[in-house]
Length: 205
Image 1 (cartoon, one colour):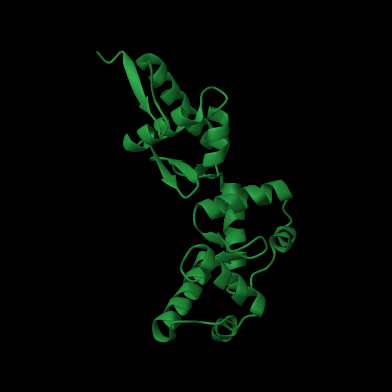
Image 2: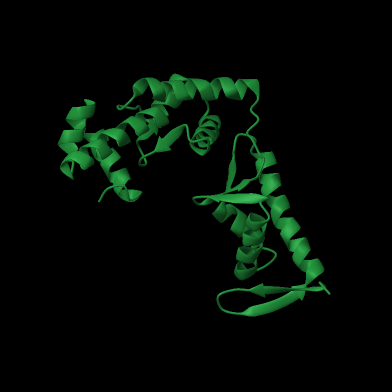
């Protein structure tokens, strides 16, 4: 009669009142909406943050089941270790948009030899908290890519480096740090960071 819901996890089956199930599912969806309302420069909520919040009211198997349910209903979607709300778009205040554009331009102009984040923050005379928030927005929008703790690339430079690496691999089956350094005319530090990142994502080994 639809008055109870069956929850199936890897370890067990259990049953809850359908009313309780729907309440928990709605609560989970509301948590995502509230997070994005509170963080207007973000596209996603970190999976770990959402999980930690939900575990205050329920358990891990229920969290996974409800998350899958919301994905199947096309209300949310997964992106790496983050959760997005279908239809949600970043709505920036004019001042935030201006600052984000300036930060992006700093990395776009730098190409393959990018500055440290602290250097960009100081150059634009921004408070650390504001700068970090705007950087997170750029990462979530895919305009910037973090290669490691110290190296951040603009998406255009990242894509250009990727094309050089894959082109070399197609021709010669391998590429060295020195070869990439010479091709892109940059220091060894950045060449090393690029190839290590490509190892991390499985493009190279």
